[in-house]
Structure formats: structure tokens, C-alpha cells
Length: 69
Image 1 (cartoon, rainbow, N blue to C red):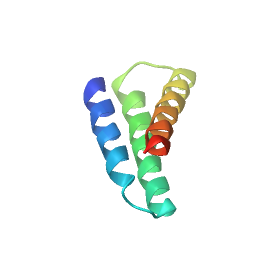
Image 2: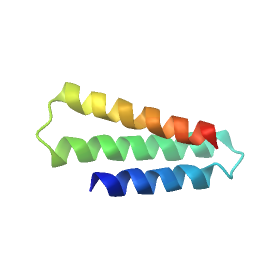
Image 3: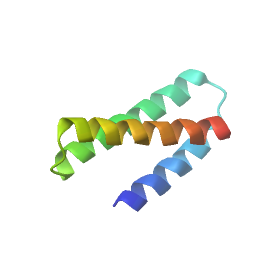
Image 4: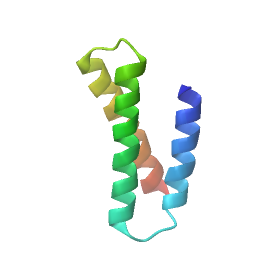
């Protein structure tokens, strides 16, 4: 499941690089990060701090993917 998330979100991050609207990029990335945090919270037995750390790491990877594009 995790591999699917990274592959799908990286592809989505690549696709949104084609748009020039910063608000669209920010909105899509925010939605991905929120969905990832919700998924980690409900699909695992992680504590709040672990969910926060995983979500922050996920956000950092996505920001690098978009910034690289």
C-alpha cells in the first residue's frame, strides 16, 4: 500500500508541475498530505507523534518532487 501511495503521489506531483498556478499546486499537495495523515492514523496503530512525523516526512518528499519539476 505504501508503494502505491508514493508512486501515485509522485506521479500526481509531476502532473501538477505542468500548471503555473501556485494555488492549484498548494491545494493538491495539501489534499495529498491530509489524506496520507488520515490514512496513517486509521490504518496503523501509530501514536500521534508518529503520525505527525510520517506526515511531515511525506510532505517534505512531495515538496521536493514539485520543486524539482
